[in-house]
Length: 234
Image (cartoon, rainbow, N blue to C red; front, side, top):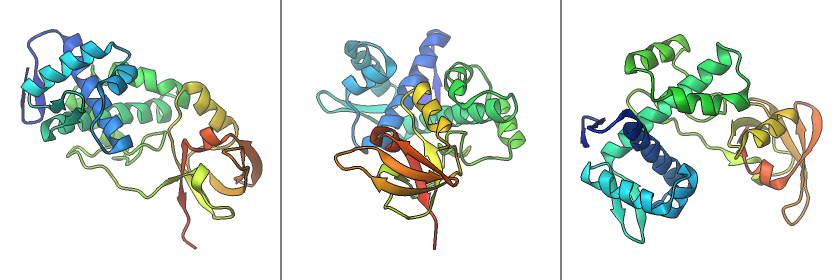
């Protein structure tokens, strides 16, 4: 494997190339969460493989110039690795949006479908898809869609669990851990662009009572931590 111009030349099979893309995407996502090196154990959990396989993959990625790996300290993407990760993420999120907007998929259904399709389509298809959708900035979960140049829009969001009481805000991103949690949020009105205000925080990470588009709702603290909002300017 080698990296040149932000692409990976692979000499094994397609499944191996897909694994490379999934690995880089996972490293990028975990880096965004902790802004630090990513442990092999964390990657093994996300990718559902054994830790020794992650270590082997990381060493191969070092040879390809895609990651920096240090034993006991974990993995960090190089510039080339980040370029590929953002390209795959762009594909995934554009496909999710297309499935929802044009094909009528429910929000909780799109992730697994996009996981399969992101490796199968061409760059030309993705460019056409972006044009068809109007070059959107976010996917149906509110996750930012990287531009074709790998630029990610910066937003100032905070979890609903940290929103002060009586401060108007709007739902901007849903980072549910599972389709069931996502559906739980939607069933309680927490869809993108919904107007929200926190009415009460129960102590010790207890439930949160919120006004959602004029309806009073109660939601658990851990779920509220996955609902990201943007405060409205007064």
